[in-house]
Length: 258
Image 1 (cartoon, rainbow, N blue to C red):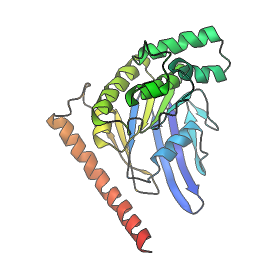
Image 2: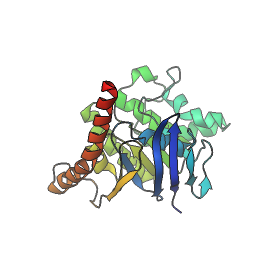
Image 3: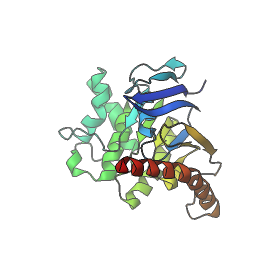
Image 4: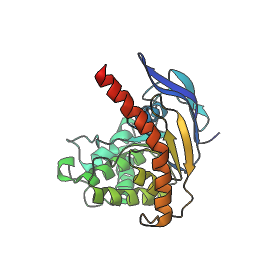
């Protein structure tokens, strides 16, 4: 059994089936990206792994233990930063440790370690409104890492950033991941981002979401986005997605016409 295992996971909301019979194993130290059309259940899958949602069918295991609720072994990084505006960078990073009752001197040391890791040294006493979007997301990553989880769950963390900042943050994520050896499960809408980052890309079908294809990306890092190999893989992923996106669009049109 891998670091994270999903067995026949399904999730329904009233009359809507969001995810159906999803099976997946993510290994130790792996960086996996989940791709799929809008509304296919990508974020729902992530929230189920985090313990923030309960599956209506199936089971999720983290390191062999059944996931029943959120826990410090799984850190979450959100798209909308989710920082406390009244707390400094240091205090935001310390938040999870504070909730756990970790002593102040240890909290400060651990927060400093991860603030340095995400290259925010010198900004410890800054408030979120004083930071750029990329810097805010670095704080979010540092806060998740400060609890020293086995798994980091990332829900389109760079989706709101401009293109240049997004590319920089992708490189930063790879640098941090290589230094920490944490398992990363990363939800994205961007094919380019998935091909650049992932060891494997998990492509989901249109709702109800289940796995259509798993693609291993056996290209050495750092990856050259301008290379023929990168373009070929990107083309293959886009082809896999096209049919599912078309299904989603047809469903939306039918819904508006009903």
